[in-house]
Length: 258
Length: 268
Image (tube, rainbow over all chains, first blue to last red; front, top):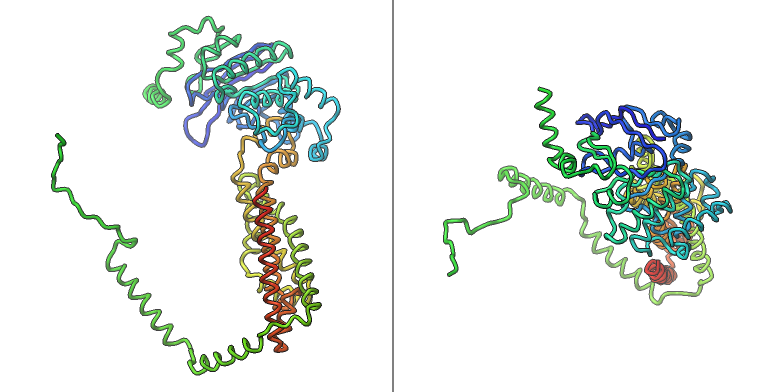
């Protein structure tokens, strides 16, 4: 269970990007987070695995308080949190197998990593997962030779290699065409069920969010203003989430404060 | 109909001068002129010595023709020594350059280490190899070892700087992905950064080998071994014909090494 309480993130001295945010993710559900650009979706995901440092608040994953961790403990916690990126973030010049095994870097020694001596069970798991998503025949191909959808499959397998307790996906389909995008969304949903894994997906495509996820969280300018099953997301809720601009919100708050 | 608007808009334009204040501009022009005249007036140029020198130069060139390849054994020894110096220096220089480049890359090194790394590179770059060679010849004596040390410093100055700049340009998303997987520092380095900088690293190494071979001929003249030392000795003994032969061989070798390294760099 992931439990976020009173999370605040402020860059520099400006307005906070996340304002006193509370969110609980339970079980093996797929949750999508929607909201216009600048609403803080990406910052929220990155606070969870501490690619972004939260300013204050608490993030607790299955009993581990993530905000306090440093060094070795932080890395050990990150191993339990898989992440899939919008731009895939594959290492272009390495093979698909090396990219997939890079999800195990937190588990194996640096020497084993450099010499590519991966444990047998890791290799077996890699082939199983690659088989599952249909990229096993690319094991020795360089990552930059693959198409977008194939690259994102590598990204998903890399994250799953960590044997994560939660999977974060930061706009995993935004760089893909509609058809591939639906395939990846379907894959994430199916894998969540098969591996009993909670998945959090930041997404711009509301139709896909409704179709492939169990719960929708709507964010607007650093706050959660909608949190319910997809069927409850009506036009009125959509308008509240997507209308206006961060600047207008700022102006409103300014008025309210003065 | 085409509605042409004839207006009183200005139809002339000239580029603005870099210094907009005319007084300052003309003062600057005048200052430069005065300085040049003053320099010409004060530098001791002895035209009599220039004309004497022309005769001496003619004697040297007369003595140099035809080039003398009789002592080619000495020449080959010198050349092989230069090659050894260049290879050793490139190996050592590149090995040292990699960690220094990481220290000097703003995006991967903590600030104090960044300044230390940049400092090392600035020191390595601030002196011409000939000056470094003179220092090392004083320190470790005449011979190829001084040459190797000199060219290691020279290689660090160039390779580490270029490599650091490449590291600063990497796609940080790949690093982020490794971090998100909980990868320790060195594993991240080897998986996310090395693959990205590898082509540049290989190109730089080949270029540096080529460059070190050329530089080893120069630093040899101040006593740091190699073909440069052979050349300096030939001049010292007024063997101008031998010196010309050596010079021709150096040019030939550099042409070959340029061609080879160009071919290799094209293929990676």
